[in-house]
Image (cartoon, rainbow, N blue to C red):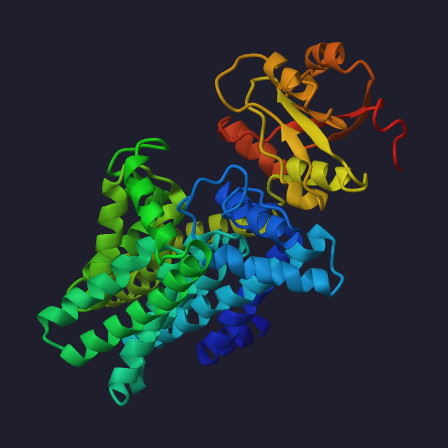
Length: 512
C-alpha cells in the first residue's frame, strides 16, 4: 500500500517530489560537503574575497598591491559578491571561516534549486509531464549535482541564469509579452556571461537562429538585454577599479589564447568520453541520443549547446568542469528526446525488460555515488590543518614542504589570518631553497612547518632542523576517505597527510 501511495503521489505531484529530493540532498551537501573541489572554486573565489574582507589582497589582483602589474584576467563580479557577503558576516560578528562557508554553501544550494524547478517547467512546457518527471528527477539527484551545487565554481553558478534565460522565451506568456520576455532573457544570459564568459555561445546561438528567422523584435530585445547587463556589470566594475571598461575581460580573452596550451591538453573527443562516463552509461547514451534527436524540433537549444561543445572540444585546454553549463540542457532535452523516441520505438516495446535493467543499473550506481559524494569533505587535510593553526593568534609566517617538491597550496582563509607562506612549486629540486628563503635576514621565520607526505617525513624533518633546530611535532591531519580513494585512483590528485611541526623558538608551548 505504501509503495502504491508513493507511486500515486509521484504520478500526481511530481514537481513536489522532485523539489523535496533536490532540497534534501543539497542540504546534506551544505552540512557535510566541506572543503572545495578544484583549485578555482576556492583560491579564485573564496581566498581572494575572504582576503579583501580582511583588508588583504591574497592574489595581488587589486591596483596598488605590490605584485600587481595591471588586470590579471579575473572577473571581479562573482568574487566581489562574496566580498560583500563576507564583509556583512564580519559586521554581524560571524568570524569563524567554517561558519561563513556554511552560509556560502547554503546560498549556493538554494540558488541551484532554480535549475531544478525551472528545468522541470521547461521540460513540462516543451515535452509534457512524463518527460518533465524524468528531467526533474535527474536534475534533482544526479550523483554529482548536489555536491557540485554547493561549490564555488563559475561553471555551476552560471547555470541558473542560463535556465532562467531559456524559461523567459519558452514559457507560455512569452508570446503575450514578447519584447519584455526576450529582454529579460538577454539580461539573464548577460548575468551568466558575467559569471562565465564562455556562456556567450548560448545567446549567440539563439541570436543566429532568430536572425535567420528574421524575428527582429526578439533579436533587438535579446541583444539589448545582454549588452546592457554586461556593460553595466562587467564594464562598470572594471571602470571603477581600472579606469576603463572591460579591462579584465580583455585580459582574460588574451590569456585564454596565449596560454591555451599551458594547461591540460587533451584530444578533441575527450568531452564525448567525459559526458558518457559522467552521466553513467548506458543512460548517458540514451540522453545523448535523445538530445541529438531534438536538433530540428528544438534548434534554439541544440545549436547553442552544439557551439559551446564544439568550442570546448576544439580548445586545447580541457578540464571536465568546463562543460558543466551544458549538462542540464543535455539532461532536460535528452530526457524529452529519449522519451519521445522510446514511446514510439518498436524495439523498446519488445524489450522493456532490457530497458528496466538499464535504468535499474543506472539508479543503483547513481544512488551509491549520490550518497557518497553528497557528504564528501573534499581537501579535508588542507582545510583542517589551517583550521588547526587558526587557534594560534598572530602567526607571521609558515612553511610548506612536500616530499616530491610539489607543496600544496594552503587555504589561509581557514586560518582567519593571512601570514606569509614559504613554499616552492617551481623547478628547484629539494627543500633547501624553500628553507633558505625562510632563513634570510629579511625574512620572517616560520612559526610552523607543514610537511606533506604519503609515508615517512623524518628525512624532511631532519633536514629542516638544520635550519630550525627547535622544531617539535605538533599533530598530524589525515586526509578524508574520499580524498584517499581519489588519490588512489589518480595520484595526480595530491591529497596527502599533513604533519604539523611547531617552531618552539617562536611559539614555545602547544595550545590545547
